[in-house]
Structure formats: C-alpha cells, structure tokens
Amino acid sequence: MTINKKQDQITEDFELFDDWMEKYEYIIQLGKELPLIDEQYKTEDNLIRGCQSRVWLHADYKDGKLFFTGDSDALITKGLVSMVVQVLSGHTPKEIADAEIYFIDAIGLRSHLSPTRSNGLLSMLKQMKMYAIAYLSKALQ
Amino acid sequence: MFNDNDIITNTANNTDLEKIRSEFPILQTKVYGQPLVYLDNAATTQKPKIVLKAMDDYYKEYNSNVHRGVHYLSQKATDAFEVARRKVQAYINATHEHEVIFTKGTTESINLVASSFGRRFVKAGDSIIISAMEHHSNIVPWQLMCEERGATLKVIPINDKGELLMDRFEQMLDETVKLVAVTYVSNTLGTVNPVKEIIDKAHAQNIPVLIDAAQAIQHIGIDVQFLNVDFLAFSGHKMYGPTAVGILYGKEKWLNEMPPYQGGGEMIKTVSFEKSTYNVLPFKFEAGTPNVTEAIGLGAAIDFINATGLDYVREREQQLIRYAVNGLQTIDELRLIGEARERAASISFLVGNFHPFDVGELLDKQGIAVRTGHHCTEPLMNIFKIPGTVRASFAFYNTEEEIDKLVKGVKKAAMLLG
Image (cartoon, rainbow over all chains, first blue to last red; front, side):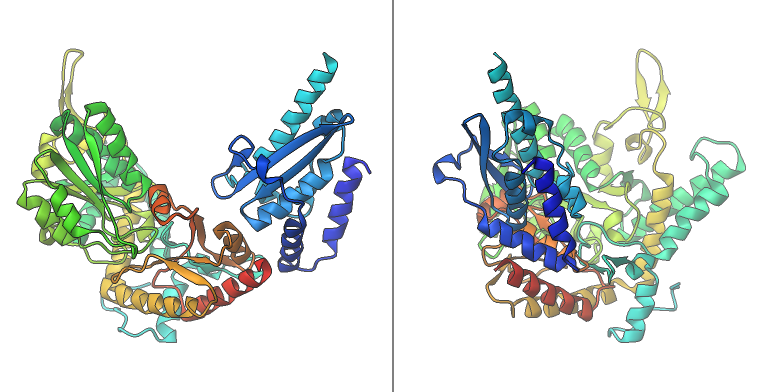
C-alpha cells in the first residue's frame, strides 16, 4: 500500500468516531499495540526531546527500504508515533523523502504538530525524513 | 459592576457567584461544544469587564503619550497613568508612589534588580540566595548576574512536602550574601512561604530581600511596610489585569543607589554626548514610552479586587482548594505533588504512572483547562524526580461544580489511559 493510501485509510477509520473521547481511546489503544523499540536502541542518541513528552526513534535499512520503531513516554504521543511509523515504515528512502504527511491534520490532531507543542512528534517526522535523505544520498553515490 | 458599597458577603451563595462570573465575559465561552472550565489561573487570570472598559476608554477617548505633551489629551493620559501608580501604591501600602516602577511583568522586575543591584552591590566572591522552588524567572536572572560578577548562587533546600528548610536558610546567611530572592507562593506546589520570617532573618544580618509575589498578589494581602521587604515583583495579568504590565516595588534608598536598567527617553534629566544625567524616581527606571493602557487596566483590576474584597477572595479560594483536594483524593492512585500546610490556589498532581501531558490533553477535550509540564520549575521537578505535573489552579470565580467536573474528567482520563 502506498504512503497516501495508508494515510487515507487512517483518516477513514477516524471518521467512524463520534466524539473526541472515542478518538483518543483508539489512539491510546494504537499506542499500546505499538511494537516497542528494542531496549538497546532506546538511547540518548535516539531520543527526540520535546518540552512535554519524549520520543525515541530507531531506523533499520533492509532491502532498499526503511523500517522504523519508536516509543514515547506519553501514551497519546505514542499512539501518534505508532500511526506515523505504520505509514512510513517499509517504504523506500525516496518515497519517504517525498511523502507529505497530511493525516494528522485530517483526523483533527494538527495541534500535535505545532512547534510550540513540543511533544517530539514534529521533530520525529523531521528525523524520519533525515534518515530517508541520508540513505537516498548514499544510494546516489 | 461592583462599587465600594457593594462588598460581597463572606459566603459563596449562588447569587454572589453568578454576579461575579457575569463580570468575566470569557467564562461564558464554550470549548469543543462544552462550557469552559478554566482552571489555569496561575498561568493567567481572566479579565473583568471593568478592566476591558478602562483600556477601551483610554484608546477611544484620551490615547496620547504621557509626561511630555503640552496638550490636553497628554495631560489626561498622564493623570490616568499616575493615578494607576497610586492605586498600586495603596494596594501594597508603599510609603512613596515613586517606589512603584512600571515594568512589563514579574520577569522584567526581577531582571531589573538582578542587573542594577548586581552592578552596584555584587562583586567576585559574593553570593545570592534563592530557593529550590523558584520559577525560572527567579533563577536565571541571578545566574546571569552571578556569572558576570563572579558570584555564587545558593539554594535553600525543601522537604518532601515542598516546604523550605528554614534552619538551613539561617545557616546560609553569611557575610558573602548580598541579596535573598524568594517566591512568596510556589507556582507549582502552591506552598505559601514564611516570607516575614525570611525577611526578618535576612535583615538581622543586614541582607536585603526580594520577594517574587507573582503567585501571591492575587490571593494574599501584601503590605510592604509591614513585611519591611526591600523589593517586591509581580505581574498585572495574574491579578485580573492585562498582560505586559508588572510592578517592581523597591525601597527608595535602594532604588536611588542603583544605576538605571535601560537607557532611553523619559529616564534622563540631561543628555550630551559626553555624559547624561538621570531622571528622578520612578522615571529613572522607566525608559521609553511606558505601557500606559496596561497600567490603566491594572489600576482598574485593583479597583475590582478592592470592591470584591481580598478577604472574600482568600476565603473563597481556600474553600475551593479544600474542596478540590478532597475531591481529587477520591481518585485511585492520585498523588499530590506538594502538600505544604499553608497553600494558595494551585494544586499539582499525578495519576498512577500516566504522563501529565496525556491527562492534560484528555481534560482539554472535556472542556477543562489545566496546565501540564514542569511549569518553568525544572530544578524542582528534578528534586521530586518527575517529568512534570498536572496543575489545577483556582480563582475566586471558580465553582464547586467546576471542581466536580475536574474530578470526573481526571477519572475518565485515567480510565482511558489505564
């Protein structure tokens, strides 16, 4: 499935919910189901520090594709991390570098991407793109 | 609108509450389709109509620059600005009106003292005392000044309830100490510190004291002459007034000895390229066009507090605090952070291992505004070994019904996160 297909799927899933609490229940559930980052990768280097919550991100490169795992100390952030990881994982560096992430806005959680919110999600997205660009330039050499 | 003969009686019946709440237009707001429950008053309080009107009237009727115009409007604006200063003077019972300096807030007031007092009185080997529960704005200005002057910053420790260790404080008062700067009320824990005792003990060693009253001025009556405090800093926006105005009270003798903080218009007597001479107090410390509108708004806020009666405010807020503490304690695994015997209108807590950010976000979507995080007191959070707290902070316009919603909201958040 393409990155955008995955984003559209998530957006559609969220349209089923009537109120905020149901949305959050689902996001929290996703966070709990997130395949945890391997403890050995939960290092200072992989830590993306937000003002309020912290996010860890680890990238693996296999068969020309990037695979991510992540974690957060806040459950709602973790749920969002889970969705972003699901959307971008298993794609080529070029696909990830070119991707436009619009689903967070579409499901009404745009505030999580505001720079002043500082929950680490925006920085995580930037970091994922950086990984993709790094592998892309390596491949071109 | 309240006037002086309209003091509310000492019990919160529904008529009083409705009347009070109707003075604050924003309290009728809905968020996410639900009535706003505003419990972030320690961050900023809401503004009564009388404040909004005073500021509106200024712009509509006599907006003009102060202290320099020969014309009618300028005189009128100057009079209103100086009346506001006298209202502040009366509110804190300062001896002279020129001991009241308009700043843009508590932060600037503290920076002013750190800079001007530091340059005049602090040298290498000296020290400044603060406490472990200070807001960053009563830590960093002193750090900057200490670095510059080769002085040391010393910190009064606290116990696990969040109270200052006064015996340790006394031991710290040696001849190197040039100033003690302590908060009256902790913005995170709600602890009310024994400031009179702190001032008396410091004065016994001839050491002046600055009190950060940002979280006290709206809850507790402050008489600077009774306290005998040397400097007092607070903000307008936390006492029902506008943002961008704050006060530095300083004893005349200190303010006269301190060099100016910023240079510019208003603060000078004569200027030549060789040497400038400075204006008298308070203008020496008010460079540039002052925040006239906001000062007038602050004056109106003081009128409002006086008409309501600070005793009533305090009594009512203490009722709300007790009610909230009791309610919150019915929540499984809820832990209060800071349990000082004497507290003002803030309560910090954590629920189980849930991140304060998650709890805060789930409260927000239920229409309840609280604050989460370290509340600009990172060193304090490190002492408690926690990433932050959820903080509910109250004003006298809050209701028991709103606190019930908070308790219910936290329970719902805990259920979703659990």
